[in-house]
Length: 305
Image (cartoon, rainbow, N blue to C red; front, side):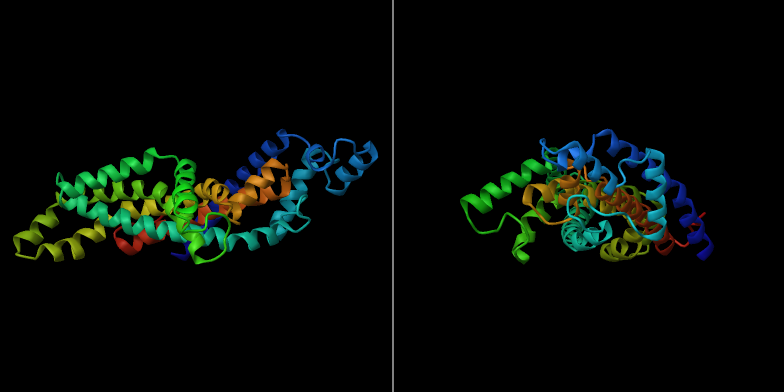
């Protein structure tokens, strides 16, 4: 197992290298930060000092090598806008994003898996129809539209929930529901499909023929096998939660990584954009590794390579 984990971690090196190269080139195609950060009437000498201060006067290859050196040592650079280390900015904003992502994932898992299991067991019934309608609606409604709609209803008309920023536990309700609505349909659909697939397996028929109760058949035998594809989706949805949080955080002015990324892109804050994309790529990689290890726990017959 340790050898597998070490091998998988070694495989992440070229992936992270490719991510850093792509994002490094793309952000520099957006323009010069000096034109965004400095007033239009700034003298050329001041613009030159600004570029020298942040190493923007060096050739792009040299800038990239400096970035790689800093990445290896844990130094992702210094924000041009906030005048703080990028790692410190990520550390400050990460708890808010994790809070939102965890709350949304909990809602999506509870609603998606419960409805998916019931829809699979009672295929063609009323519960199945309701579950499929919820999945269709969740996928059809854009996140930003739903967020604005919830703000209008609960913040403007009813005035029962805060809609901007993080001012307490109640501030988490609307953003987490908005993000969970985006995450739930995939969990629901995969759970339902997995349940339907496992219901037709021989071991389920054998358990039923032995007189085992339906609750035990589903709870002990069926769910363990049915959860394997669900774990895959959950792992991907964790990354989607962090990615989808960009839109949700912007709509609700939630002080997390998503809002930080939007601000960094709009001001061409290269170090922050590079650091956030690198962080997101690392999260995806380690989540995928955790998913693979979970496979082995759910089904010991699975061999990791």
